[in-house]
Length: 355
Image (cartoon, rainbow, N blue to C red; front, side):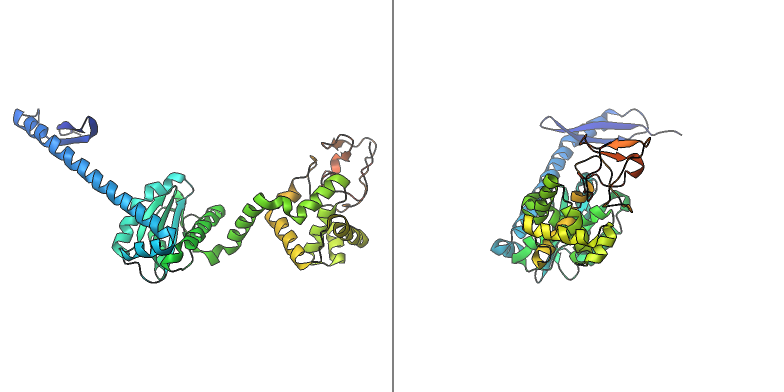
């Protein structure tokens, strides 16, 4: 296979290398060809610099316009008039599992929207691409675009709530929440709205709230009481709420005596001020138990947790039976019964006998 010879000359502007131009030649370039390339290089370099400036100004203009739209209020109303964004609007967020995915795609949606929705405003903010467009066709347009993107890139799109131009910030927040939910689900190539992933978004918001204000939760009071007095209140309250207040069902599920459940529910109310029969308190406890599940899956001791028919009964160590010691060195649990809870994690009714 033979290759045609090429003559190449660099493109430079103010000492910056911009690229190169080349021409296919049948042999060594003649003096005329060399002169033509050398004369053309500065002219083309100036055109390249001009194109860069125009593109940069256009990108900055899009960024500024989107920033004004997402600011809401009269600023957004005024910004919406320029591209003629009339009627109800939505914010669409696009992001990928790889932070560079949205950066790589930044130009493609703008090109697509310029053809199918020329009034849309689209710009990159961080690792997320935000677009403002009419509410009536937003999801359809974005879904159509995503069908052209390989799912392996992990790109997802979230459509915010429908709002007037003055109220775009809530739509932006909803779109970003939907994107986080889709990425958490691992569903690349999907476009969704808030109703599609409402439960995921609510739990995600709840976790954020709990990470900030969890110390004030009634569940935290129960955990502190358990840590100090080894009373098993969290386990009993969790079972009681899961059984919708049915003591017999909670006792059967936890393999405890019904009176044990009643006593722990009463102790939670009297000692911790946590009334599991109060509707608001029940809701707060259930949300914290579901949204902050780590409270029940990571005990202070090192013994693994799990189900067991003898939960709530003493675990004894028979002669010759290997034992496992938890972080509290004075307690030992039979290795064959590791699934039973150490009294320092989710407590047994009575202390485990020392070996």
